[in-house]
Length: 310
Image 1: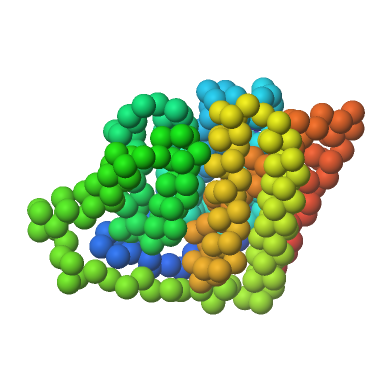
Image 2: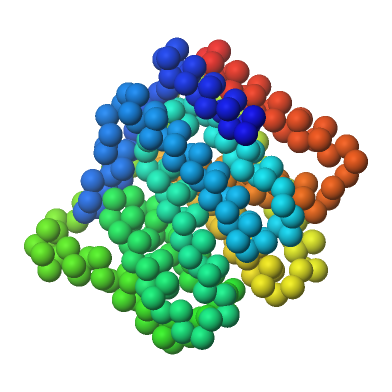
């Protein structure tokens, strides 16, 4: 709760001091990009803050429902908000990256509910249906279709019927909109790749690169350290943690490879990083763990302070 309060307060301070830079992007193919759904202002700030708090709450519910960490700790939820806080422009306005993080987390919840079920065709259809709907306004969703297909294999539900439900889920949104003559296959738009770095000055770019770099390294290091312990879990918990690990590493690759659209992946990267950090401290309950945790929080507060100075 304290971390949430800090993150919200400092983001509001950034907003009123003019430290929120517009995030460029026009990634639509058929549907309007989420970056253009709301004008910049107080409403965009309020909705994005509420959505970030909802994502943190979903992280807590995900662990309570499926016991992924085998611990009652809620540290990762607070860390997510602290990581988001370090980049006020991504915390202080609604855009496609926050929506991507929310949708992927919601679909992860749905995927976990299918573990070892005989014929979970409706949930699988819904997962890929929503991913394709998202892809119609932000192409980044397409990269998570194979991730969730791997997740189906990890949940022990991958078979021909699952593959069929996946294919139908992907085709259906396009088929419905085309059937109502709302879209045309000839009118598909090529996304305009607008580099986030082109919209900020050199000092802001350096702060962004360092902050994302720290998060990428932390996600990778904590993720690898956690894998050593995950192998000792039962098959169900291994499957749940394995999917998060795959999603973490894929998101790292996308942030680095698809750098012109890197802003879209940052909230999900922060979500994965916070989960990996929280998992590490949950399974390695050292006597002075709080020192390391406070050290991480201090690093991101310093990065936030840097963003206020540039």
